[in-house]
Length: 448
Image (tube, rainbow, N blue to C red):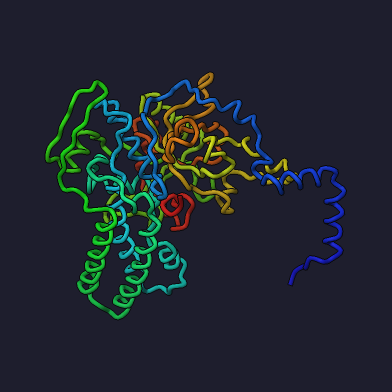
């Protein structure tokens, strides 16, 4: 049965505690101030000044409010940065995150339905089915998933499809939509298991999707088919577009070849050898759309690709575990030295990056944008980070990330292929290994 905790053992632990001279002092400060305040180390502040040798001017910081759209904000921010450079749009300009949010919700619902149909023969306690039902859809996502939305639906300025209560505070909508999707899963599984025809199943699914579209339209408004747009550039010159479609807008004002932008990960676990590509089973949004695909590189090459793109003047989308050993919500510091909890409690919590991934201590939780780096003798010391939590965090919304923190808690960057080596481009073109649905390299789509 195992070994129980005896009273003698408790007495021994109590004596060990009282024998430590510092115990009462630490007890008083921790009980009064909390663990983080008691372990705060100001050394991180001294060495985290927001000054960088490469510092891109990217305008005002956006605010995702009470929603999990970090991945979407970060990706659209990289695009508006380019618009700022090309067309001199004001620093306050934003692309509509609500527009891509609408279509993402709609497409994720269809994605869920199709996966429920595919797994209908499995019991509901099967891990894959349980995984689907745990969160039928959420606010999270991946770079490739936003590309899939943009390739199909384009983008619009925020003025053409502004924020609503439900896009900025998404919990009510998500809760109701997930309840509906689970109810629909019952119906779809029953149809499949009663040998209904494909036509009957798809006909029923279309009715369900019509209801999802109605829910999204009531909550976010109906997305524009065409729209007018006007703005004054940095030189105060007036510009106007009339009757432009979302896809035409993307082609004219952004014009990126999204196939040239690829995801690089640093996942040093035994199941993911470097210089190979990976995808995650059941991860996506647009059925028959762009597939999520990652190239796994060692950390040196991972960072070098990001530096290469920053040197060219282009910002970099990245994914990390933002809550780990950071003071992200106020000071905007991502630094291993910010809190010394291990020293405070005299415990050893050291783990390798691979061990944290394998033992569920860390995973991707948040996406932001690299907009600068401080290179000393050619090596990165700290990074400038554009977040999407508004201007009150850090330096007007910008954060400072130490290079050591990046080593431990950054997992993904998106760069253009031209910033990779020939060997890396060749590796990226290979067919990906399929990872399990719950792999931590897919977690950003479910957690924020």
